[in-house]
Length: 152
Image 1 (cartoon, rainbow, N blue to C red):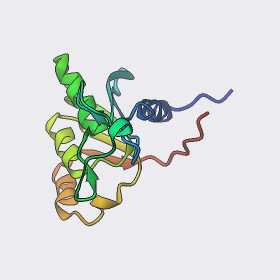
Image 2: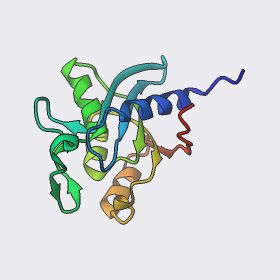
Image 3: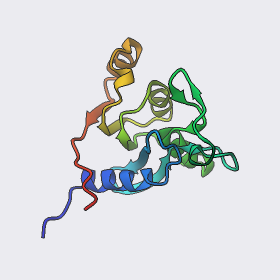
Image 4: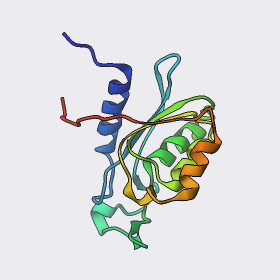
């Protein structure tokens, strides 16, 4: 029997959590983890504000080719931890998709120091500020995990 690694475990959970996403354009999941103790702190998926319409029910609310109806998975996971007054200082986040510029700022501001993602987000490839910010934080680990989401 082959036992999966901790990274694979947290990535698989992120994909499972993504399945709760309510935007048909892309379902994204995030898991915030205390890597020292291998414990899950918080999770999030992209979805509408509580009590508001979902993209799957009424369609996407598009501005500049982005759906603005939903809160991104990474920000939702950070918000869930904040609701419980849980510090994210030194935590890791596992994302199904590379965080956008807004989520990257929230992640860094929350004190998360390790960012792992699976699928690239092409919109940030030419964002100088994004890449410059990553290099400004020398203790920030920012790494792509190659993962085949084969549902196993």
